[in-house]
Image (tube, rainbow over all chains, first blue to last red; front, side, top):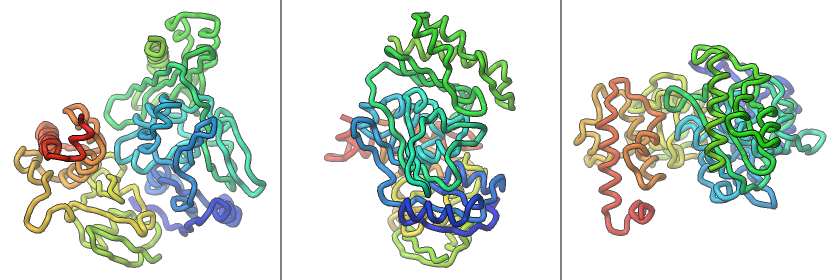
Amino acid sequence: MIPAPFAYERAASVEDAVALLARHGDDAKVLAGGHSLIPLLRLRFARPSVLVDIGRVPGLDGVRDDGELSIGAMTRYCDVEASPLVAERAPLLAAAAAEVGDAQVRHRGTIGGSICHGDPASDVAAALLALGATVVVRGPAGERRIALEEVFVGFLETAIAPDEILVEVRVPVTSAPWAFEKFNRRAQDWAIVGCAVLAGSEPRVALVNMATTPRRAPLVEEALARGASAREAADLASEGTEPPSDANASAQFRRHLARVLVRRALERASR
Amino acid sequence: MELRLTVNGARVSGDVEPRTLLVHHLRAALGLTGTKVGCDTSSCGACTVLLDGRSVKSCTVLAVQADGCEVTTIEGLADGDELHPLQAAFHDHHALQCGYCTPGMIMAAVSLLRERRPLDDAAVRRGLEGNLCRCTGYRGIVEAVLAVAASEDARPGAAGAAVAR
């Protein structure tokens, strides 16, 4: 399928992109790597009249350490995966990035695009939730920071306004033990269920595809903080979740998977 | 809009609609039909080309996103009449049956060989997970890629050999 016609604007800078979005309003969509948006355009599930391409905006990609890890929104999955800084200071994120799609997808898809798309099945979003990441967005009113868990508000819906651009993902540096688990049936598929665990003194657990958004598992975290075993804590992984039922799995099977995967991840992280 | 590309070493320019997918531009406007359209849903990898040296699914890249970039297709691999080592290895190891996935499979493998060492059976299979062979002839494909990796690694001073150690 070929996308419906749209006008194409190539932003020269973040300010330029923000101005273009302000001018075109709700009819515009931001194009980063395009690996969530282009499939939607082709199926004509999305029909924006204008695409604002931020792929050439200088300074939006790369990983820096300024006390936290600062990851540019246009940093592609493969570069997150290969970054020595990420490997050393947030290895959970590197592991999750390596699980996304396939090599070709990781060559194009971006960390910022993944967040803005807001897919509940995003591996990287779960890892970033477990890591306690925040995002920096810029809009007509200037810059603001949002905790990642406040970004995800519904299915493919985020708290980033239509006239705002995600410019940076900030990840606290950690040496806590971690694990990432993903269950799917075929290579390159989205997770049917996945989970990211950051152990240590304040354990954080996040789930892939167990609700309309990527989400944390607060009951598991509280149980761990009380000193519960991995098994006891993991038994709470499906409490309060609203997993989808679809051709891949029933909601009931997803709840089972969440408990099993969280237990495996907690055991692996504690080794 | 005006689009400039370097395709298989040659500069080409032309006018494209923004909605044109790179694979359609390569096939329809430039006549490079070696790159295939398979699933049309970013899954099968038949449309894989190199964009600035990295494998991408050209059904999921707008031609305008590639403006100013270097594109390599299967037509750009051979050196005159001499096949690229991967093309020769696919021939030697019977790494194709119907052949439809082959151009994409080879382009994905070119990128994989540049990026990953050491490569073993599992690493090749994982590296090529974005490419589907509906004849399910994966055994020969994996052997062909491993054979090229081994011959590159055996070359004195090969970059791959250094990384492998």
